Length: 61
Image (tube, rainbow, N blue to C red; front, side, top):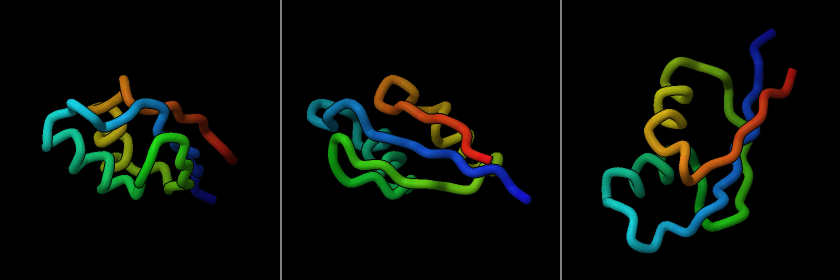
């Protein structure tokens, strides 16, 4: 059984570099306050690590 990560966008994308915007879009987040549940994979962890100042996340089992 794989773990699930609940990821929420907590800061606006205004003034954020295009690469970081693309990373947030890749996670499936659309607007401030939007939450998605993603599988806990190395790819997702890497994307979260790239933009931690924009996100809040927690592990679900």
